[in-house]
Image (tube, rainbow, N blue to C red; front, side, top):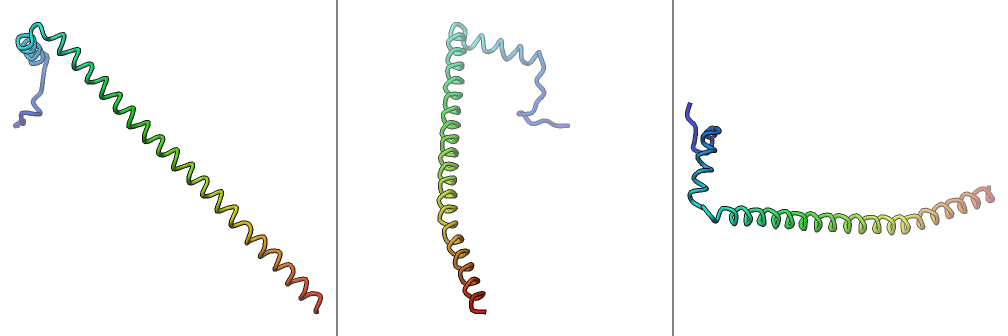
Length: 99
């Protein structure tokens, strides 16, 4: 069975070698590297939170607009139905009087 380089199984020995190489390469700068990585993660999370807040605001605005549109169309639609009902009753009454 062949593995590509990206899918090699990584065991505890390999992780120890990687950590040792990291200490040798970065040496005294290792705490700064860790701190900068931590700051990068925090900034990334803030960015994600900002995007999520913008999406939530847009959805809330869209729902408000839809609600207002539905209320407006309901109010407009009720008037003609009432008028048609009143007219139908008048026609029925006039037909009954003529008969």
